Length: 285
Length: 109
Image (cartoon, rainbow over all chains, first blue to last red; front, side):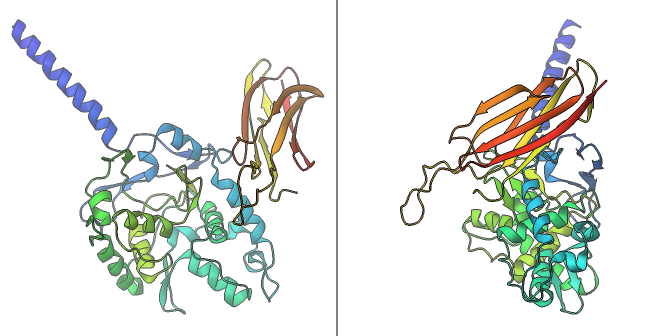
């Protein structure tokens, strides 16, 4: 009898250790509410098209408490400095037509919901377009202004402003109809191994999320929080810049920001987050 | 004059008597240290916020001297026990002589 108790004690101790190890592995259980009012969905059932994952998690759930806290209050979220800058640019006329964004769109608030459904098929252009492509289309064809560099500061700030007014709304990009071809192409890129290390997106973000890759806690690679302020480089990062960084880390020649390959990949990765809230501009490490 | 400078403060609108409140401040400023060189090898002149002062109803509560090693967009946060209703006055002093001010009211009751 005494031995049996001892045995039970050992089992409990081992289970305790395993529990502690598990806690470090997966996403945490924290809830994200920004400014005490915007309730974010950071965990949802995976969209039907995902074959290998049951539950999707925002990257926020994989970050430390300190990093998480920065995103919970706009005053502490460093992205908001650039969002405010973009809001000023929104009202400033540019180009030969003497128009500002505000000439047609009134205020950034009228663009609420946009970030949630992009990248999106554009019937007139006959292609899938990202928010960046739409911004430059407006600049060139409506304002008569020079297009911005695809992943430059001006552009990323503006996308952050457009994302900020959609915060809390569910990501819901369309993957059927005319967008399907682009989506399939993005899916193929997601599962293709690149570079000398021969890694695909899926190797880290689907098969090994929750694990540590050296000092980094691997997330599912969701892009609902982009543009993202990274503690690593203390600036806003566009989603294509992040793709580029990831592919570079596999020691491959990367695609260019704004290239058709990255637009397709953005559509596919965005669709993997259908159901999560738009969080951009978020804070990550 | 340094461009893109904008002060921001966050003070609770109200507090109960004796309650400790947290006050957050941030000023967007590039805080050029004076140590860096441009592409031609010339030293970029120092341009920083060198002093930050907070007064409450005319009485000084915080007075900070800032040095060049302080990073871009300096952020200060402090706790205060507010004795009565009134206004916090925040002042930042720039190397170039510019003075940036912000005010925030708080009611105690």
